[in-house]
Image 1: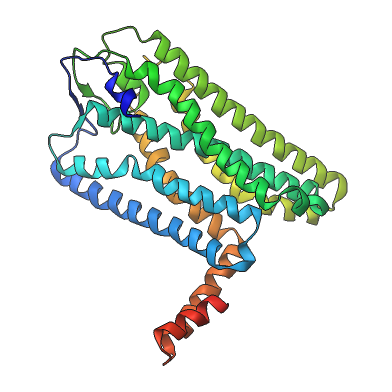
Image 2 (image 1 turned 30 degrees about the horizontal axis):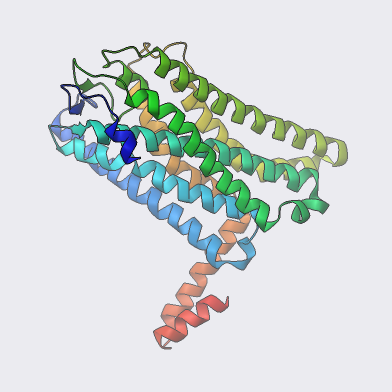
Length: 332
């Protein structure tokens, strides 16, 4: 990565200014409090899911292994943009170095690409569980689950390296004002005074392949699930199967509805005033909604959470030593 950043063209711009939202200081303070609360709640809820999956034997299943991976991803995904947004609410300068901007750009889309692939893997897991229930644990072995998770991360690393190389070679010699809340693709390339055709073609081609490809695979999985359940089950069975997949389905439509609006447009030169609001939605609010949707609509997760809370209450109410208390908790 160091050699990549050192290959950046030398220009008369060494930093950018993120214009953000043109709001008064008092409004920004309110937004700072709101965004900080959302950020802390997102981190906390995702950490809770990871801990529940790790500490509860009942959740040691492929579905929850991928859910824990997804929660781990969401923690980093929101941390790429929100801390900088929070500082910009209170800092009138709102500066970000060129290298810092490219790093934010790379990791934001790296985690976004990984999220796309993980959603496909989670839909595949549900497809196997419902369409091939007797072979589920034979197919979805621990080794396969780990390979799928690692494959999602490695694929995203490679895809984003293909994107970042042409973007990093752009020259910036005019305005350094990025009309956005973070270093997004379209606002960034607009500032370039060199040819951006290669960067735009590469970015939108890969964005289309990743988003349309992943979305198509997810839809194909659910079409097969519905057809299988209709052919083999009663109306009650169909309702039960759809309830099992509703949480994942909801996350998919919320996520893809926003990112497709942002990144599958005809040209990077198109700009909408609502872009910043949409960006905040999928970069800040979606990582918060995902653990809430998964936990509130999943009976096993709710039972595991209730069991952990009950054990913790027993632990604090007992007069045993702390070491004994911890031992009691891990026996459960």
